[in-house]
Picture (cartoon, rainbow, N blue to C red):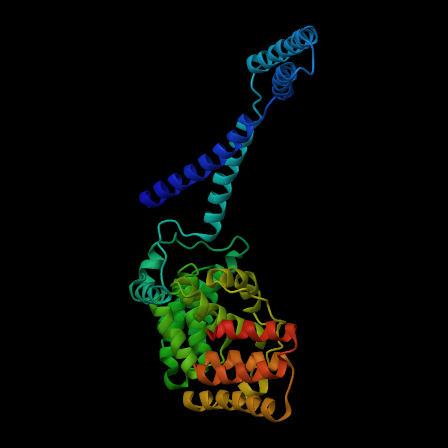
Length: 406
């Protein structure tokens, strides 16, 4: 870090010095009008001598001319002396000071915005390796919760509700198999801000349900773990998210938190792809739309992507009916269903065509599924279809950038 700032300071001094020398040379090169007059008068004296030697003028006329020119030389020389003794203008120094200040300040501000103090340039492979290392070595749920202050009930909670929760705790302790009571306790603890107690109760409820636990149960459990950790996605929360997504790959909250985790371990590119897909699928009133909208442009900047936010809900993702129909499917069957939707879109575009948004959506979906070869083929086909439309090509290029085709 110290070496970086030393090098930066030296380079800044070199740049400012070079500019200063150029400015000072320009200032020193300025000549007063009397200097040009002196050049003319000296030339006139030489001309008089040449005329006299050729006999063009008489000795008397030459003497009178010398006297007049000499008088003018003395006057010009006096003007030169006055200019030399006059105080130097400070315009050059002021300009140098302004330029130096502007160069240093602008470089510092730009670096704070775009740079990462303390970090060197890293290749993509190194960044991915560091992200995976961070993922494996990040703090546990217990460590994250211990670092936060003790939870305090919200100010608007009525004392009667607190008393009811106390009674509920006692009742659940005596009836450990009462799933409905445990769920109610989890919700009540969360309302009080006791997220650690809330996720403990939720874990108890999932254990009591056994094989009957739904994807939403795991998604809600992960949500409580993350809230208890102050928004941090711990390794324990990640495991629960993986279980939720294994049961339902379309689960919105689990996908949002997965993107959040990827952003926290240094993979904003993956977070951007996940969140962009959620925005495209919608619906506009989904609870994850607002937090994604507030963060996705920053995520795109971190990923180095020139991002244009899509219209929410236009991504033609699985419909509510599709998701409901998948309720009784196994994880493998659900993944097959999603693949079938992508294949259906691909077949429709190949046979009937469609708007550029559908082509971009298909490229993004194939990228999320990891089918980059097929995504590249679709991108090449789309370029042939929309090659003469610059606006459409911008949309396609953005989709290709998001999945790493360019």
